[in-house]
Amino acid sequence: MKSKGLKIVTIGGGSSYTPELIEGFIKRFEELPVKEIWLVDIEEGKEKLDIVGNLAKRMVQKAGVPIDIHLTLDRRMALKDADFVTTQFRVGLLEARAKDERIPLKYGVLGQETNGPGGFFKALRTIPVILEICKEMEELCPDAWLINFTNPAGMITEAVIRNTNIKRVVGLCNVPIGMEMGAAKLLDVEHSRVRIDFAGLNHLVYGLDVFVDGISVKEKLIKLLSNPDKSVTMKNIHAMGWEPEFLKALNLFPCPYHAYYYKTREMVEKEIQASKEDGTRAEVVKKLEDALFELYKNPTLTEKPLQLEQRGGAYYSDAACRLIHSIYTDKKDIQPVNIKNDGAIKGIPHNSAVEISCIITKDGPKPIAVGELPVPVQGLIQSIKSFERITIEAAITGNYETALLALTINPLVGSDKIAKKILDEMLEAHKVYLPNFFNRENIILSS
Image 1 (cartoon, rainbow, N blue to C red):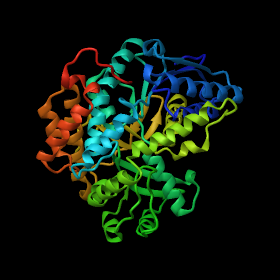
Image 2 (cartoon, rainbow, N blue to C red):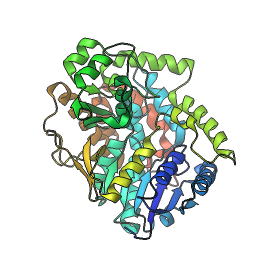
Image 3 (spheres, one colour):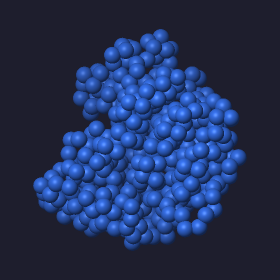
Image 4 (cartoon, one colour):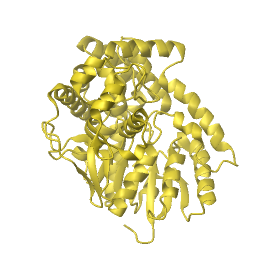
């Protein structure tokens, strides 16, 4: 890495999350000497890139740190000699997400951004683009770290591990941080005092144990979570509470996304109701985004607005800055990330991605081995891992039968007949972003 300062490239730089990323680099500047931040987007995102980029420049100027902010639509120019590349893009923008959420609901199947058919189609659109980015990185910045928080983060990370020469790849999610903060709030302690031993998959991770000042408080936390008025959830997931007997028998700290698997009927009903009353989550987010960008346009705004925390992905960017800081300084602290398994979780292939607590070193995250997962969760984890691997194959090959197989074995679908109907309708709806399936020329990819 350069002794004169680091070059950071953010693909999807016009994202509403970018001010949080800039804030994270500013507050760590003394130990993380970032010299250049390149914000990259596509033509469709140029207006937002300009708005966010100008806010980023004002933030840096106010902080008085010598970071140069560059805005570009030229990804190759940005990637040249980068030290860290972060990815936070959405192929098809929020309009595609709205289709991911609304179409499955017509068939009584969960419509959600990263789970079930929605997550499946997000992966189909995104994996070819991330592999294209990786090819450019192999040529232009082969030693750079790829820090991905484009969803579905676990599948994206695994696609890179299995299909590219990029060795320095880490997937990142804000769910574990949200779980830590939620646990701290329930336990009425500072977040910094809480540590959770995480293991599982992205959006399917479990807290195997929970500590405050190094002392296990898992039993106490599970008891608190058994109260229907207490919950740990995300902005984009309805809190519904857990059956006390179920939680006690599970004896693990579930993540908010587990509600989709352990409360499938209730969650589908809730999503159908919400889509009728308030619109899909994508449509709600679109309103939040519009309001945020109106704030960002204000030439007197020189800091990240508090309203950004209303977005479901709040703390993603700060987690990315924390991870980059720990790699650069060889901090050897513990953070939950998506990384190559390498035997850390028994029963999952070595070259599959898992979400697990890791020691963060200058050579990257080192997973803390947990051995076999508890029997009650092994089956669900392995089922979703099978779904992820077949989805990645479908995304790369564009094979219809492989896609149908992946969607059918997803436990949130439950019927090959329904899977086929959803697949056919969603393939048509997303046709422009799925060239591997349609072999059409002049198809524009959003990246």
